[in-house]
Amino acid sequence: MRGSVPHLHVSSGFSARYGASHPCDLIARAAERGIGTVALTDRDMVTGTVRFAKAAMAAGVKPVFGVDLGVAPHVPPADVRRRTPVRGGAHVAEAPFRATFLARDAQGWARLCRMVSAAHAEAFPAGAPPAASWEMFAQYADDGLMVLLGPASEPLRALAAGRTDIAERLLAPWQRVVGGGLRLEVVCWGLSGTGPGSVRLAAHTLALADRLGIPAVLTNAVRYADAVQHRVADVLDAARLLRPVDRRRLDCGERWLKDGPAMTDFTGESGGTVRDVASPDIYTEDYSAAVDFLGLQKIVDRKRIGAQAVCGLSGMALTAAAADSRIKAVATTSMYDMSRSISRGHEDYYTPEQRQKVVDHVSRQRWIDAENGTYARLSHEVPFDENGNVAPSDRVLPTSLPADATRSRRASSTTTAPSAATTHARSTPPPRGPRPPRCRSSNSR
Image 1 (spheres, rainbow, N blue to C red):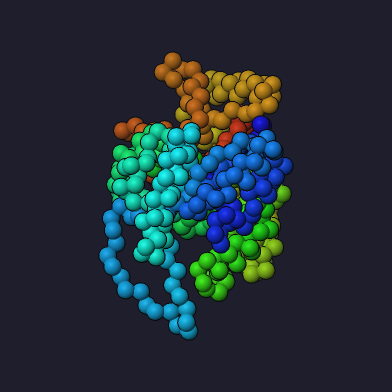
Image 2: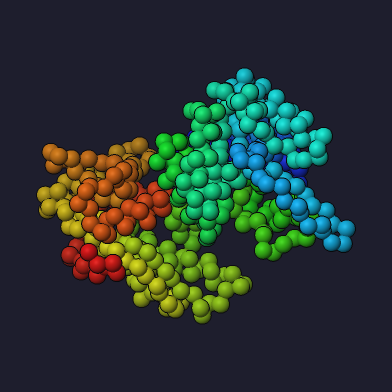
């Protein structure tokens, strides 16, 4: 199904006081939006599976069965005495960490059900939330199960805290137990900071997966079928945790069952249309589109909207501010001129003959894209092999740097490699025209 994106982490209303939509509603929306595969991964239970399976079969959507299960920490925490709530309140204990388990076959589904039952049986006498222990993993994990470790897992919590070393150490036992069935779950709701759903954590997760050779899976950690249901999620959180609706912890509104374009829209315009084109004009327009969005928020003062940019986007931010007087201030840190880099290669290493070869290669690729109805992804700058031929690659930056790499290139590799991994660059010929002036770098070479 063209444009389809599988959803492998979806909670329904059978997730007690967590999911906001019935499984039948989720499948109905999936069919409407052209989503070919949906995995039902309710929290700590599988009671909605039958209704989900029947609805999926009737709608022609491929069902995948799983569970979002609490997980015991690898290192047991020290006992901490919690303060007693005031005015008759009660503490609600939840599993400290979570992981998503997907059944690959009938045997895996049977093992998954046994593991869920064992987690409940172990937790019930103590009145604790269900959490699978490492003994259970050793007993039930096999080739029939796939495990997604997302922002709520112990390794990615360490990664969000900036401790990559601890994250790698915590992933080691998972690799031993799960083996080739381990995946790192990338969740991006466009949030700031380093918490769940943030752009930074998503980028660092991709970088960690690439470094350790663990496949990464993009999900939306769905809680509701439609975007308008995010307020229901806020009420469910308050009911589950026995607390008032906290405006500091409201649902982000992005955890709905998105179609393909919505899931891949990293640089959409005001209307949210996906372009997948690397273009200075489009990047400049993105700043004005961001102003559109911010200016419509009631808490934003339209007279105090600014723009900030790092690396090659700095020139685009300055151009946007020159053309859009709604941008009142600009803060930039530029290491190179992105337009010049795409056109002539990093530090002008393209010869005229090489640049023409790049133009010819990309032009031929566009015919292929037009005939197939798809598009090919190219690297930020098209490389050449030892024989002087175009060597296309879908990587934005090389896996390793040469020994004589410049200071700016080393800095770019260490600071922007994770975020660059999320860039979707369509095959667009290098721009022709007059030779652009060289930008002065803020960190001189």
